[in-house]
Image: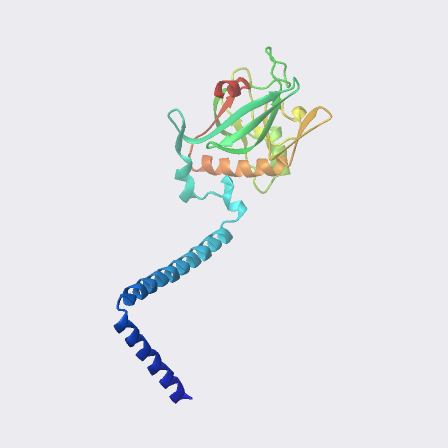
Length: 245
């Protein structure tokens, strides 16, 4: 058996020698073909390696790791960007887009990326206590480190993660303006409610999944404030959309 294979090999080599002696130009063609085949094989291996690298990275990057609250101190510097004039810190933007004379709906952006929906009271030219949204403008956000009845209520409700209320500072004509969770305009009293989900039925707008959204946002902003990174929110009225057109 081995002898037969040896004879076949010798015959094949002899054929190639005779072929190249008669047509030497074939050597160049075959050489180029071999180089092309080698390049194809190398490219295929590179694509295979890239595929497994990407697959491995996707498995490590879970949806939760993409949420702002999961940024570590190593990523804190990425949050410090010049997003509002000369402000260098974590910037929130609230773009109001609908007011049905009872409820104002808006879009909340964190560092220029959409984060969730917002719900506030309606606009009144003359403030009606507990039924009026705050004026558009830019406000710093800090912890209100006072044990108010509402603070104690929230601590009892969320003992695992809640400490102090996130308060908008120096809002003209208003005080105790917080960002928190809630369902409808009766839960706001001038505050800003946040949620991933927005529902409109029977001519009433309301939020669902608000607690989970607030927990996630609260955790992220608490991390920023605990690391002495300033936080501010810029609120724009509905006419802002027309100005952008």
